[in-house]
Length: 128
Image 1 (tube, one colour):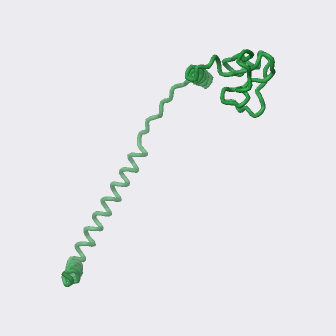
Image 2 (cartoon, rainbow, N blue to C red):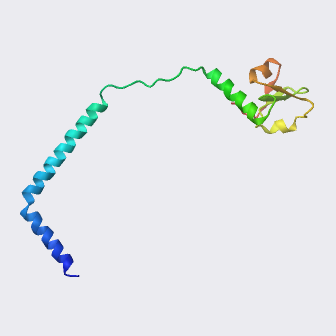
């Protein structure tokens, strides 16, 4: 068994030395074919390109539908909570909303509605 490994190595060396010209020719042809195939691929990639088609949807419509979905999923009466006795409004994920009394809590669907009613966003309560 230990003699087989050196024999295999010797036989490979003999084969390569006898067929050196054929091996070089084969590798040259193979690399040439690969080069030509790569150039055709690159040329094909540079050919006709199809534009990406995107739907034109206004951002306001997308935001409004996302807000409505959030409100419905959370079972909220609106997106913005405020106290009828206060001047600040909160998003449901803000810590201050838990301090609002349920009987005084009023809901708005958008920050614009809350601001129109005279409320301002609470400090430390980041919006959307």
